[in-house]
Amino acid sequence: MTTLRWWAVLLLVSAGCAGAPEHVGSGDVLAASVEDSAESCAQSAGESEEGCYAPSCSEDECGLFRCEDLASPPYALRFAPARGADGATARIQRYWGGAVPLPGRQAVFIIPWYRRDDLPSVKAAKKAIAEWSRREKERHHIFPRAFEEYFRRSDIDIHQYTLLVDVAEHRRVHEGKDGGPWNRDWRKWIDANRFTATRDDHFKQGGRMITKYGLIGMPMTYWQTLRLYSAGE
Image 1 (tube, rainbow, N blue to C red):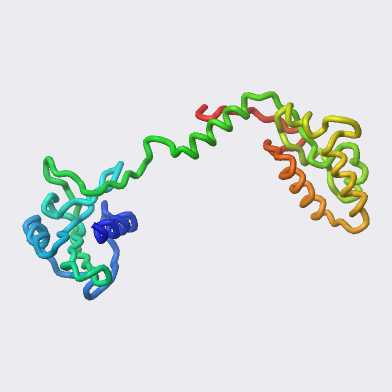
Image 2: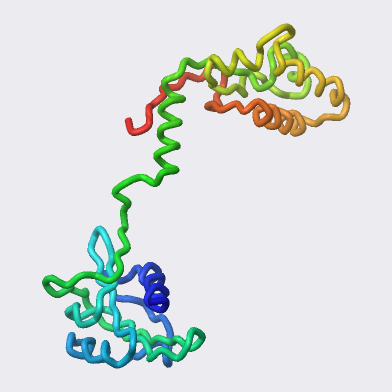
């Protein structure tokens, strides 16, 4: 079944299973002259240990079927007899037209085009966004108002760079005297770099501060309005 799984990957790549495929090779890889019949496929299925397989696609999924279970398949994947793990070979036989599974026949491998359910990571992200959207929020200046004049000399309009964050998080970073830990960290950085820091250095420091304090929010200007949508709305 190792070879079969490898051909399942090929099924993904050969996205032309609903139309006429393009040239894919020559020699052993491509047999240009084949009989377009279910009987030919069924006969080839007995030529090797693993058999012959072909894709059949619908709007929702693609399946890999045994050749004898299809009528007029577009491709036939005919496996050579097993010769060891390093000797497995295959030839692609070309067929034109849509592959139609015979009544009652089942695919050996199915690839859905669309997921019916979200991945766990997507569900977790949607839940986090929904919870964040429900909380009360305030605008947080990345570059503190207390140093507005200093930032202006560095060609930075502090009101252009705010984060819409949870009220509780905003209060946490400004809790205490002198603007809280957020402002104190900025003051130390400014005192150490005011004569050498470029405009770009200031933005890099702003990014480091956001990471240090674990702030999550929507970037926006101080005057910008935003309607928040819950996940799934």
